[in-house]
Structure formats: structure tokens, C-alpha cells
Amino acid sequence: MKDTLKEIWKEILELDELPAEDESFFDLGGNSFSAAQVIAELEDRTGKTAEVSDFYERETIAQFAELFE
Image (tube, rainbow, N blue to C red; front, side, top):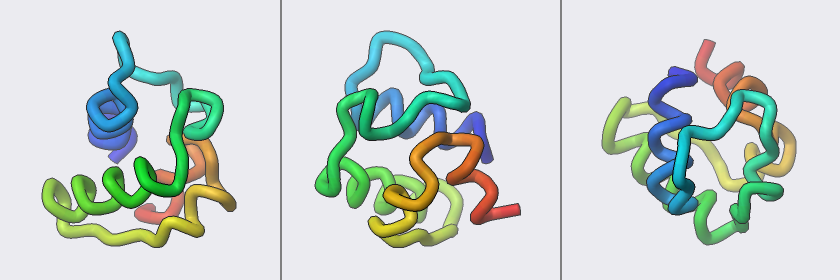
């Protein structure tokens, strides 16, 4: 799941490289609109769903991935 999230964040946030597991989504330039885009892409790729509010409680890939473990 972490690798999938890294790829999605890289694409949505238009990063040059994959983010580290401990980098904050918001520090990387994320906002509520891009969080919604990540959620939609995550559901398309994996069938798993989340809420935008989850990004405010779990800002890093490592924390966010815990939702799906």
C-alpha cells in the first residue's frame, strides 16, 4: 500500500521524485482538493476508500497506510 500511495502522491502533487514515508502531505503542497484527488485515484487503483479528513489526522504515507492494514 505504501508504494501505491507514494506513486499517487507523486502524480497528484506533481513531485519530481517519490515522497518519503514520513513527509507531510501538506508540506509537499497538498490541500483538501488534492487530497480528494488522491482518494479518487486510490479507489480506482485499489478499491479502498478514505475520507479527506483522514489526511488531517494522518499526514504522512506511513500514517495514512495504517488505515488499510
